[in-house]
Amino acid sequence: MSATFTAAGIGSWSPLLIIGDTLSRKARAVVHNLIGSDEPDVSFLPTIARAGTLELLVADRVSAQLGLALLSSARPIYLVDTDRPDRNMRLVVTGDITQVTEPETQRLIIVTVPVQEIPV
Image (tube, rainbow, N blue to C red; front, side, top):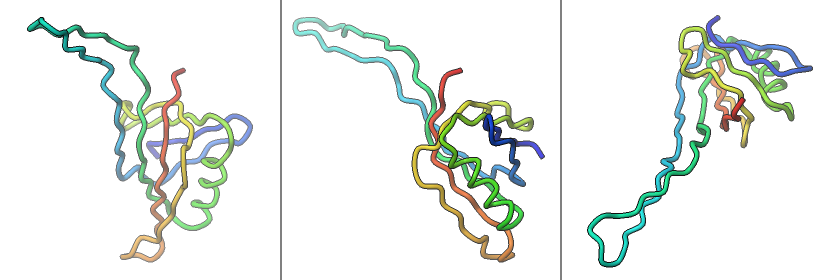
């Protein structure tokens, strides 16, 4: 499996696949238009971490429940994705974790997780 979630004191869990991600990072430049000047003053703020949503494909309800236990733990979680290293991060879950039965197979589960990256 290419993606693994790990939480200290809980263990590790791997979905079948991360089927999608929507991660964003806010721009950190503030532009000040100065009276009487054609050139603005720009302030650059420190970079902040990514936030967004991960969509995970899970084999069955048992695996989904194991994933929910790990993802809903009150501790930082490490995501390592060997196929997509750009997804690697230390994160916390920031809202409701949802799970939906995949309509075609009625066996696979899609788990949606809102996340916030934590700088290491």
